[in-house]
Length: 76
Image 1: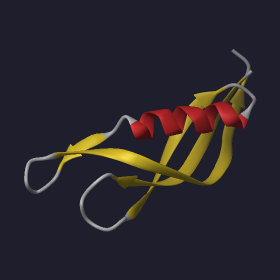
Image 2: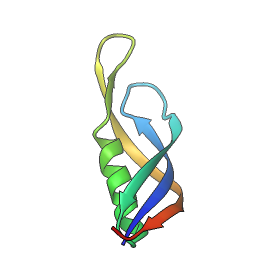
Image 3: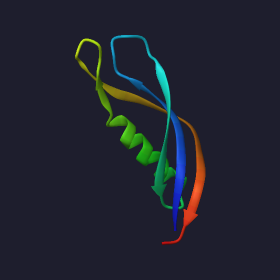
Image 4: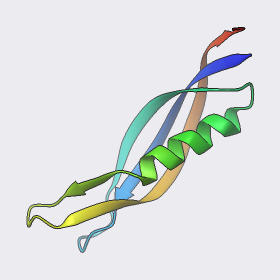
């Protein structure tokens, strides 16, 4: 059985400025256990990076889970 979960969370960038948590959500296909969806969302989020205004690379360093919602189930 496969499930699609919507994982809602907050993340932050590693930067010299004060901590600023940004909200985001991802839809993830996983098994029946929601923890697998949370782990996939965390792994994807912590791989993100961006360039700041000075051209320096910032990496995502924080992940806070808000909620997990089951969107759909299917037997494939």
